[in-house]
Image (cartoon, rainbow, N blue to C red; front, side, top):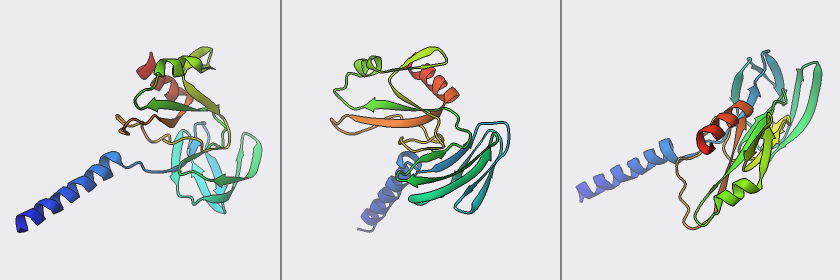
Length: 179
């Protein structure tokens, strides 16, 4: 009986470790600064300094938050309402792309990809792709600092998973996976 208890405890620990290091998706709120200058941003009276070409993760609760910052000679003072578990605060209003990848059985992926297109830098990209340049972006599942899963198991159900990319990262991802 003692050996059975020990084996059970080891199996539970192994399952937890697999979940923690391979399966769990960590939610995050990011402030991005793809520019060449430092940006100071205030969120609910809390100050953040974002260095050039940096992405900073912050902790936020759901609900309304006040954002104040000055970028490119324009002062912004706005309220954002957090309703999702992932979001990007984009003070530079840089272009980001959300790509929706279909998973699951019984999907005609070819017709999904060819029926929707977007043009980026005079090149046509196929698929469910949306362009954003808003101060606050939250319409996606996987954030900039997360990858699509290598595999996704959900028996018989069609599932679409969305991920946000910077413009250059999206072009590289598309080239590596769909060209």
